[in-house]
Image (cartoon, rainbow, N blue to C red; front, side, top):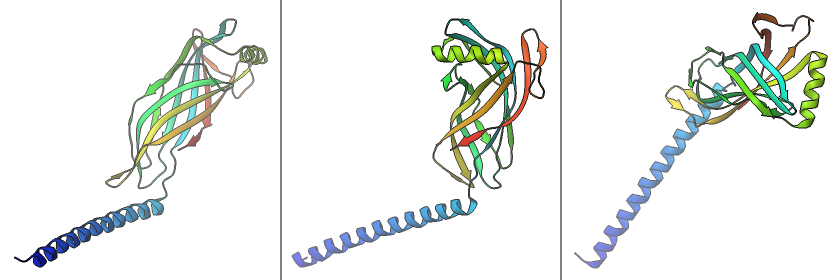
Length: 211
């Protein structure tokens, strides 16, 4: 075989490799464009969370600038999408007072939420002798004397979307549920005693959700 024939053979091989690479690139582009088009048509909607109630077992200053709290909250989540499922890979719930975390994080069970499905959780969130800022301690005493305390129940997590066989990457889920706890006797937020040192408050408070 002549040197010229070898050169042509090498050139044809390189040309074939380039064609294969370009074919793969075009195929991947078409697949990606199809997925994005389907995604845009379906228009996934964020899940909707509602803080249904809160049972307060403890919420008091145990020492200067230390707070002990113990809640059981009921939170529901609804998937409003017709054709998109939601994987909850991780969910942590906790309480804050004036932007300061006052309880430990409690993990909610991970799982899959199908189209239009509703999940309900009733976790305990608590913190024993949690140090709080002096100005928050003063504000808490004032709020307790006034008979109304504003607590924020928050959820941090990771979610994935499922469209047919396609499953998206993980997205950060951030939920904020305001809870106005009325320690007085004014309806409709006054609580109902359900045991020794336990008061249940019906809230039905919609939460803000960011994904």
